[in-house]
Length: 108
Image 1 (cartoon, rainbow, N blue to C red):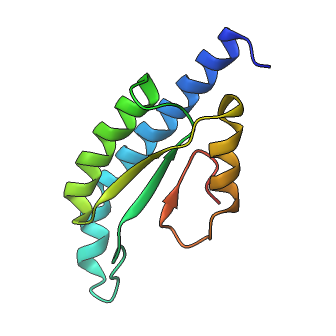
Image 2 (cartoon, rainbow, N blue to C red):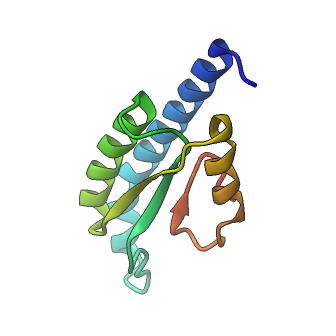
């Protein structure tokens, strides 16, 4: 079982990763415009958050999803999967298809 400090460290890492995702998507418009054959994303994107809704990680994820969704022109769905101290959501992300439509802290 994780201690409170480890949980806080994990949430901080998750938030930093999500912020990195948001910063990475900020330059997405230029890339999409230079390659007109690139039609990604053509369906909604799932952002896995391995914690309960209403927590810090969820609030940050929803904020980033909203701004990234506006830039991409595609809906980003925040999927909260709490359980086992974050293991359940992480496992779902690790086993998701490697197609770019499921984003998590451990996306391949």
